[in-house]
Image 1 (cartoon, helix red, strand yellow):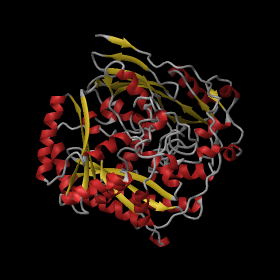
Image 2 (tube, helix red, strand yellow):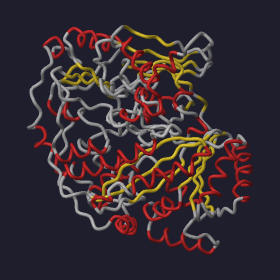
Image 3 (cartoon, helix red, strand yellow):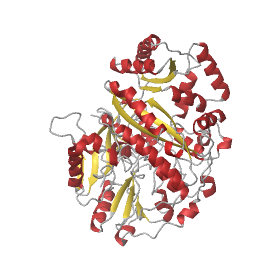
Image 4 (cartoon, rainbow, N blue to C red):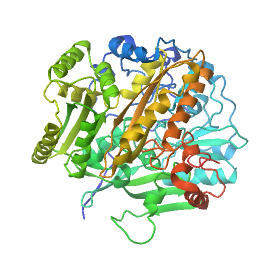
Length: 591
């Protein structure tokens, strides 16, 4: 067996006590006037797609120099559904820093070189990217901050931190890329001090077994760094969630993530082979055995524990050779039923595509408005109308990854299905495929741009069997669209299928609503929508989350899916590794 030892992206060690400071006024602005859909990567000119993006916005998504503009016709479409909007105010970084209290960490913790109690470091690790997080970051009411942030560089460092946490009765919150949209990483008010353990320094490819195709990484490695280090050896992991530029391997595993090309590369559970989990009861080493009938699978049991069982420090991932070719294309079909049938048949016939995504009619219209220039919009709309497609048309985005012969066969087989359902394809429709591929990781920046216009946006997702897809989608959309009726407010909602299985598919709904008069009232609106949305999923035939995880936001609805006994089994397992309930309490299982 041949092994390659690799430490290919060494960088100078940084002092965790020195926070990244950017002018607060600039950080509160998304600078949308100077950007366009075709220049969103201008700030990273010369960088490759695998160049890590530094999180420099303290109160929003990603890098301060990257923005995504909303076209005038796109904003007009949204406002035609929800009405005229007014922007909420935003506090400055300096204003929030004044509210950070003195650290309560014991001296035994603060004297460690890996621990920072700097106020800005603590602030930047206090919130994720959920809607309540955005309200807190822009309104200034964080409620609680970690008392310190640790930056371990090894498994031994994490062991030391958990030992001190036990000795001094501290709450521990694991922190990966800070991209959680479900309330996974937020400290809560309480008497026990909180230490957040940020894994950003454990970001290297440690070992590559090229014969078994197993790569060992530090769990804090972000998506671009994963692929850059593998690409140097001719390999790819292929896990591409929308948060890919910022999120980490450990976070993907802890929340059972799913990437945009999961049809071809698999979900994270197919990629995670084993690794090291540091728990309050000791170190759990999960062997990277290809398959086993030796009782319950510890690997499966630890995935999705969301920081409640411990902290992943090193992870072993199943990788594969870089594809010879990768292509993304778009077809339009007459209606939802036709598109859904193409997806179902494609996956059940084992056609080797790497991704399938079907937007319903409302989302199709929205993407045509939001994702194109006025001239592109007119060209595509005119072409589709001339080909006989009506307002019921749906957009199907698909991709292939592999050698050219394999891709050619897959596209031939898939095109046959498309033709059977009356599809419209061609160079003009493939413009949307290019739009998707170019901006696939930049759509989260839209939230900041829309925020500046007083348009609030959020998402939720699920998965269900094929025979429940239509009813479930209708329930989800109706639930959110009517959730603010008591206030006389309209909510715009649309849905797509983004992951397909032989048994069923995921449903991903995006919704827009108007900001209220202040931050608290706007949060109240979101809470109504969130409850309506989550209740529509808590029906026994759908999951409360297909890819975002449970966190705090979804925990109250988990019992509908797991059942009383299932919740008890899960809780007992977590307590066996964390009997003192100090690891991320309140996440996953409602206390």
